[in-house]
Length: 445
Image (cartoon, rainbow, N blue to C red; front, top):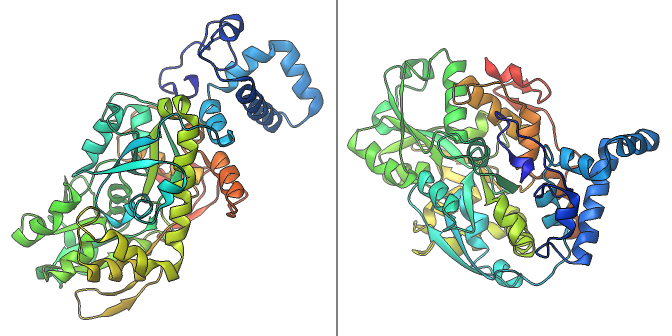
């Protein structure tokens, strides 16, 4: 799929409207292509994209006459994910696949994907989903690349990194929905109650769940803002989230930044205290997301759309405060998060003990908002550049728009009766500073 070619290595454009054939004639002769009705949907999507790029009728006609429609669409597909957009735009049709394996980590960020099973949202879409609990993020990545998972719960930066070939072979990914915002914390061992000032953390050892995670980027940003070099002044260790509390108890780490319920579990077990919620760094920051390979979205468009509908419906259901108690009850058991109800209630309802003797009331401690803001993707990419994960210069907006399917999410949310933001980009306030996605270089310092 040309739209997801590695932006570090431009490749020649292919010569048909879908980008998979050497010529339009070869495209037209391909019996495996969709039906006439599906072609009509695809043409509508392509027409809408062309009109959005060239709103002036005269300019649009001149452009199409000068290069030809096939060449124009092949060129557009090099930076806009037409295939995934068309998949999400399709009307409900027969599901290409009904039995699906979806990978997840047992953290509260996975709540929408997990809750969609016991609450029946998958079944409503005709899907029989097997939720595959997985220990770590590298395993999630490897199993979805290998095709063992049809879709997965992933850290929001992961589909960007995988598409770019960071930490793995490059595989085109699409992310049509965020699962949760906020929902994480910095937790320190109980012995460090005298170290509330981050400037005193020099020499300490912190666990992070994955290199390509909001946890890594938020902690690095937070440390740097307090005058510490995260690569020299502290040790950052990648560790599966379920192992963090035990390592904090043993003293092999001094603290961690991770999703719930492990911050609250450290308090529950009496081995740690919540130093700060990540919402205090960036209120409304994304954390985890629903992700599939571009290949899956292309080959099973009706199933992909059904999954999107189920997960977005679940996400918005979980966002309602009045549903949180029932959601906590539904996902606490051994097949899902395997945590005490008390721990999940404190996280999902936002009234919790912080381990310092305080009871805090933070209704937005974790929230669920499915809209995949492309401006958030730009910030993540800028952090990858800032901390040396990306070496070359890149086109931030191009990659953000290839992977974070905001336009398509808006259309599908409207069909489901949910309101979505009118724009794909906005500014974000992070530690009191405004991040403007049109100036990603401001995040490099």
